[in-house]
Length: 176
Ligand SMILES: NC(=O)c1ccc[n+]([C@@H]2O[C@H](COP(=O)([O-])OP(=O)(O)OC[C@H]3O[C@@H](n4cnc5c(N)ncnc54)[C@H](OP(=O)(O)O)[C@@H]3O)[C@@H](O)[C@H]2O)c1
Image 1 (cartoon, helix red, strand yellow):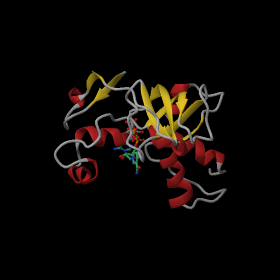
Image 2 (image 1 turned 60 degrees about the vertical axis):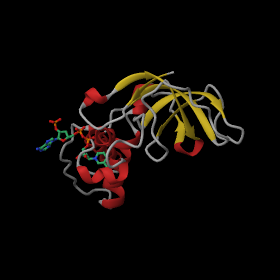
Image 3 (image 1 turned 45 degrees about the vertical axis):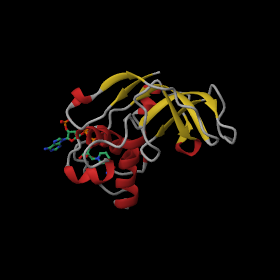
Image 4 (image 1 turned 180 degrees about the horizontal axis):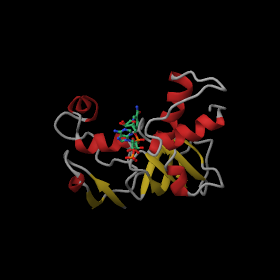
């Protein structure tokens, strides 16, 4: 299969389109044909290696991960023997940042617990835009901000990935 691979830190020029082995799903994994993937901030850190302290997590001299890409949406192609939640043909989306990423590829193998069913009324591109940005917005407002219905909130950067979700979540939660 084709994948976008990185072997060193740097500007976007370090991305290389390569032919790599198609992954084989383990017992608890789902093989997903990737239809859409987001370019999120965490991938920017992973590729640039900046700011430097993040290299303690991503690899000191070169990236530990070969294939970036965390927020994906796609269709289940095959499932491992112990998978219960999904079957081939299901449309799914999820955040692969806790399970090795690998979304910048035609296929990725993902533990079933990292995926959810894609809402039928969302396109693959819309679903792939959700995981990191929407979760950070939800955590910021609900968990860290402990907002309550009727309060007023100022969202700085409301036109960005996280900000656009923050505006919608704030509205949904009854904020002014
Ligand atoms: N904690 C986490 O897990 C996590 C995950 C992802 C991102 N983040 C952080 O969250 C922040 C936003 O991420 P994002 O993905 O939403 O980024 P983004 O899509 O690039 O959006 C950035 C937003 O900030 C606005 N902005 C830029 N400079 C500004 C300034 N000087 N004053 C006011 N607004 C300004 C931009 O406005 P314009 O569109 O007008 O330029 C845009 O609305 C980043 O700092 C990122 O590192 C944290």
